[in-house]
Length: 507
Ligand SMILES: Nc1nc2c(c(=O)[nH]1)N[C@H]1C(S)=C(S)[C@@H](COP(=O)(O)O)O[C@H]1N2
Ligand SMILES: [Mo]
Image (cartoon, rainbow, N blue to C red):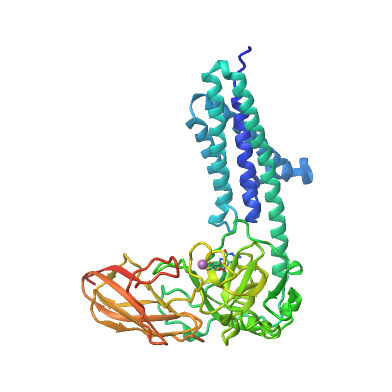
């Protein structure tokens, strides 16, 4: 038996390429403009003195960019092999190389115009892949070194593992490219879309209490909370979308996107929130939604009076059962096509989602909705209900203190408090604030266009020097006072009063 040296360098190259593949796939799926490798190439261009760059362009012509990217890739391969060889002496030595490469990638990505936190993700995914794949391969090689009699067996194992990882890397990169291309295309369709009847409005001025630090009454689309069970968001061209309404109806209906937006459009400010929101949490947002009222659609179909719910299904197979009453009464439950005057963002359900005032999202707000089956709760169970959450999900009355933040130091004396309160489809009558278990003081409320949105509140109170606990509670238009009983979100929404701790020092 010949004793061949273990292929340390090869292990490094395979781990490195696997990392490149996952980072590339991540960049494509997130549709970040460029992969980290291209960002590094662009960074090099920026760092190159003008004269040198001009010469390079003169010599290479239009090939300057591809040649540069190929150069970066070659240099990387060299680093990968080097890192692989370092693994002979201990796993942390290659790790230094991986971290250094990731740091260069991060620096290049951060230097790009308009870079955000999300742009760092591909580099981090790549780094994680490198480290985990490489340590697995090193382990395989070490076993062969320690037990020479098994070396040829371990070598076979190594080759199989290495081959599988290489194939998987190629697969991941290709799949990422594929998903990314679909998304880019849908993103382009979305941007070009002009939907008749969709208008863009600013929040009415009187919805603000005018206190800095209070959450804006209208939530911009990019700040709206995101909750769903998907990893890659469904990308659906409006032309490919259709909605089937069926089940306990006399007449079924299938609507195309053009059919839908050709109908009477409704626009409405509606606050949406998640049942998982903790007391004081941020899984709540308020937007102006444009769409078609579901009640109008169902009206013509001849609903069986025995039906008590509509089972909604999304393109990605998520489901929820919504009480039929909420979809057919006078509220603006709608198939929404626009959010704050723009076609729905892809992550918020483009091209069509449901929005139902007064119900938590998990029983009502189906993103990428494609199927509505009129049914009964006895026969239908949605995704979260099946996991033990309550079948009915009416929103509970809630309030939150946004200013000051818990832990803040304030000046003793007159202190302004402010925040938001909501009880969609019931409305907020009053908000009260209490310092250290004292009397409940009424806050002033900004206005709200309907009972379906949250409302801002503010109050200025005397706060003496020292540490204090401040609580807020809301009173609904139906007379209900928000309970102080603490309950976790599971199974039908959290209860309890948002409480902050502040410390007041002498002015
Ligand atoms: N297709 C799909 N729709 C979904 C969900 C989901 O997981 N998949 N989650 C729901 C939940 S729990 C909430 S709170 C809202 C959140 O909507 P947003 O992400 O637009 O804020 O979407 C609802 N619609
Ligand atoms: Mo949710």
